[in-house]
Length: 443
Ligand SMILES: [Zn+2]
Image (tube, rainbow, N blue to C red; front, side, top):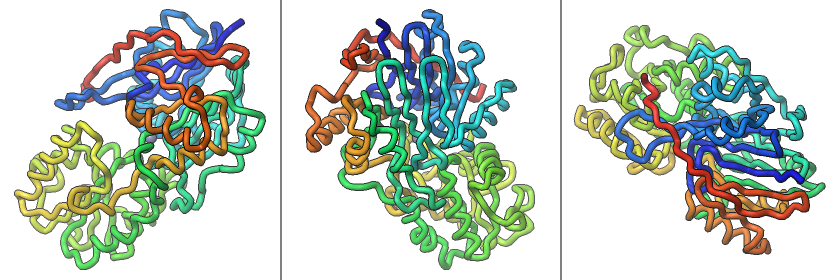
């Protein structure tokens, strides 16, 4: 009898980025996510790719790739790996599909990414897939209930339970419960913030802090965050417009993402509020809010070049205020602080995590939200994903508080295969010798 094997091609257990999960049943395969990773020695803009050699050498029939959400570590490896994967159909929510499509076009690749509505159900080989709307730090994110011949798997990638999201579209709790009622074999769940008790604050709690930073500021406002933080950007836009400022997107990722999100109605502002980068000299400093890429100190980003006085259009001024509405991804500290050092030496005012802690909230569920998901899904097995080993161990501890038994929580090693037989028993199988290819994304 065939077994269901869940295989982390991007490393999986113990790692946060380069997410790519292979579901293998006999010779059939399904892939969830196809993201890039970031090397620990952040000396350049190098990225890591998942290692797909297991999938390609075993010649599995890949029926499709389903994407959970529009973060680079969940979809941006597509253009690098798709040519070796054959031409599987690719699916994602409206926003995720549009971002993935844009990424493929950037690399001159033709495949169409198909939009999966939340009400859709698709069948890919022996796998039946139901998307569930969830909240995270990028809008339009999905969890997936994957029905396989040996049981139902809840693939709970990055999420938080934001009860007051900016778009008034909270997680679909009733669908989580309805799909889980027949019994779920295993819940894979985002464990990144299992060390934090309680609930992660809602994204909408940031607006008052943004208003405070803008109030009485007479110079330019320069706002930076991840370009996928569309609700964060919307709040910055709303606050800036409220103070009579115009907005200007600077940097490729910021310009592209805002354009895509606006075309889908996920980001909104009046056309007359938008200033093109080349037009900013026509406006006074107090009339401008620049929304710029480079919050993680990326070498080639607009913010890094602006701070180094190498940007073609904007030069730093002592009256500029730069707001970092983000946390710094571990490993990026040196690059980000170098940019901040350059800016403060030029006399600019910089507001960032270390000086002001109310300008960012996490997109990940804290312990109470993780426990709520465990309760709603009530699976036979739990499998913490998307975190380091300490987060996985903490996730196990908090599951025990709900009455789950220690043996119900699966804690695989880096690259380890988890198997389920047709009686629904789980087993830790072999460890794949994964070697994640490293490439420079600017080449
Ligand atoms: Zn994410």
